Length: 151
Picture 1 (cartoon, rainbow, N blue to C red):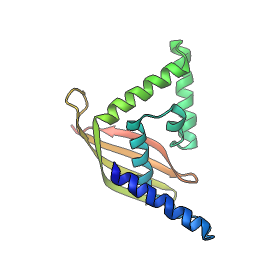
Picture 2 (picture 1 turned 30 degrees about the horizontal axis):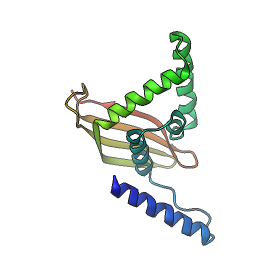
Picture 3 (picture 1 turned 120 degrees about the vertical axis):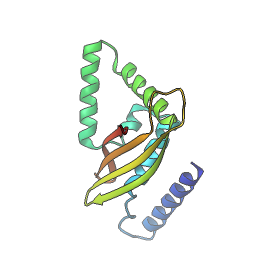
Picture 4 (picture 1 turned 90 degrees about the vertical axis):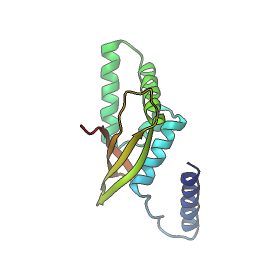
């Protein structure tokens, strides 16, 4: 985690120097850097709005439609459902160690493949792979993320 923080700090400093030097824009972060920051934020704890900020516009609309649908079906307030989601995803992330296997960038689309090693014996999860699709919408945003378990 410290290495990621150092790399992020260096990248932000570099972007600031370029901006001050009059360059048009700093090079875009690689998709895996954005996803790694998202995953670290899940573990650290985040708000639902922080979580959504990593999603593409289409994914945000899809998520909000699902939340409203579940709210109307369950009678539970949105805040209660989003808090349950945040707690669940944090618990899953706390027990999973990701290693980037592949990053494919094709124009404004990117695909990431991570191996996922379960680190908590108490979870029902198995080792597997995380498959992430991203789009560049003024920065890389998550379209979808899926866990695949072999077998």
